[in-house]
Image 1 (cartoon, rainbow, N blue to C red):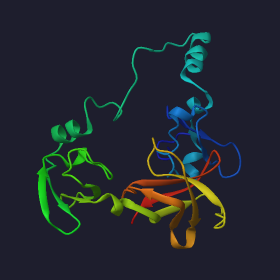
Image 2: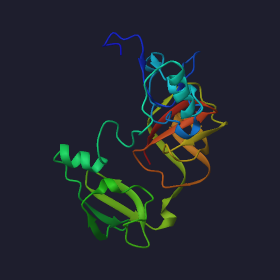
Image 3: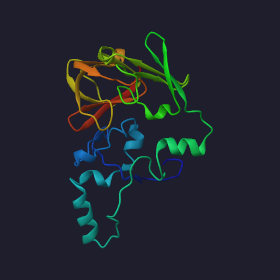
Length: 230
């Protein structure tokens, strides 16, 4: 925005930015569509210039009514899904536009080869579908094109480490915060240890995926985030 000499930039994400202090990112009033998870790593300088008009509407019907009253044109027939402005799936896009080999071998924790796949991007940590029984996906090593599977009891943890962690307000290590590890998931209760870049959960959590974002909330406010490391 600064390089383009723009004072502000508007986005269609469902989220809000507070008007005071650290200009913290906030959940959308439409909680079912909230996308603050995806914007959690924005810096103060980026947040203070960002406009998120959709975040103040409780549902999409309010948006249509707002546009109707002001004579704005809008399309109710369809909605974008998946990767914006890209037709098809993520796999289709990669296969069409790159020479990336998406094949991978599947091993268990003991290093025993089980089978192979021609598309590792269709697998995610915790997945059981298309995995030899009684296993589930434990981790994915895209660089080495390996999928590691494990028994269910090996998918749980109470603590996770973060890398590239950012905290936008002072964190109280004795306070319990709400944490999301994937956008469509539920909130998990955890204490935050900034000095160790660690999250300690109240209860054990399943399938924490290395490389995925973990976002820390205090009520409606995004107060920190980081990449799950281990």
